[in-house]
Length: 77
Image (cartoon, rainbow, N blue to C red; front, side, top):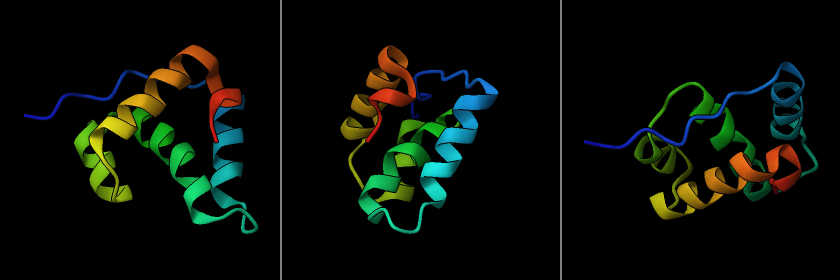
């Protein structure tokens, strides 16, 4: 069974900023992966589900999530 991603409680302004980063058309797709992972983690998706959707490793999702919990939006890509 997959573990849940580290719980992320997003403030409305954090969610808005992450959604803005995801919608940015000038940013490369790779820079949109981190914000997407945070939004999906806040929705309760597991690390495995997020990694599969983003076609990356679970370890990378865990690393991003840990950094987000410590540093917030400023610590993202």
